[in-house]
Image (cartoon, rainbow, N blue to C red; front, side, top):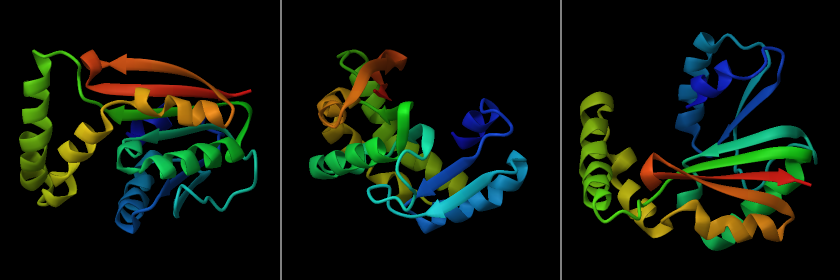
Length: 175
């Protein structure tokens, strides 16, 4: 996901990648040489309590991290994103979601619950990273369930559904 985003960001922009997982940060550090970005910082810290000043970022994005948070943590996350995002800045949150289609649902469940861990084992040698994906996704359902958490702190939000509901997104603007 990061290489795709980086290709679409101005070359002079400062980018700060944050992950709670030390392993993910190490992997990003290794891959960062290919990204050819001068102003790239990779930080291993908790996104619920960032070490940056208020109103630091024009844009913030989070992909596939919301579903693992409790509702209390979603409240904390929304407040923290409000704190670090500049006025008129944008937050984009993308997440796997349970499709509403009764036709698509069993195929999506089969894919996420069985094929993704199998591919993780074959391609990466570690299915454990993906073992809980279906449980988190089925409990989370979609980004629609957390919109109010972001509106409560002051964001104006829009909801988007992608890939027939298999992914959902909130785009929030700090006004």
